[in-house]
Amino acid sequence: MEMPNLTPELILRAYAMGVFPMAEGREDPELFWVDPRMRGVIPLSHFHVPRRLRRVLRGGRFVVTFDEIFEAVIENCATATTLRPRTWINDRIITLYTTLHHMGHAHSVECWLNGELVGGLYGVSMCGVFFGESMFSRHVDSSKVALVHLILRLRSAGFRLLDAQFITKHLSRFGAHEISRDAYRKQLAAALKMEVDFNTIIEQVDLETLIRSGT
Image (cartoon, rainbow, N blue to C red; front, side, top):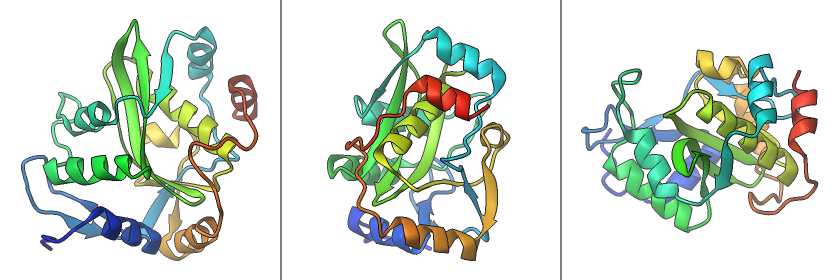
């Protein structure tokens, strides 16, 4: 369904109802609403850190930042690669979510290696829920490291729900699982009642604590 009058404000209202926009592909200008029958979620309190990734995280090889270059992250997520020949992010998505970023609702996590952006992710925050949108990786483990640091931020800020939309093999390694639409909407409603801010730390959770709790 074509949505010519889609605005950032309308996207936020849609998220609050449990739906989100997508495109068929990067070159397709149209968008449509998605309301999955089964929803992917990543439990913040029972996040699993795979054994090999624990060593990578403790090694400190990557530098991780937040909201440094949102536009570069979403552009990388929209770029087709050999492993991901098609993406659902078109130019309208990029424009709308960049506006949401400037409004303080969309956030990025950047993963750097030797001063080069090699991985990251972005999503939308609203009250106590973070809606994960997409991630990219240009180096082994970079997107995984970004995800772990997102979990750190969400737990430190007091978030209640991390919406992964759809389950992938990549996400299932971290404990992501599917719940029904009704179950998701109940969790969403509870999270939307919370007064939480992505940039306000309530109780700092350090990396080692997260690693140990996620074994």
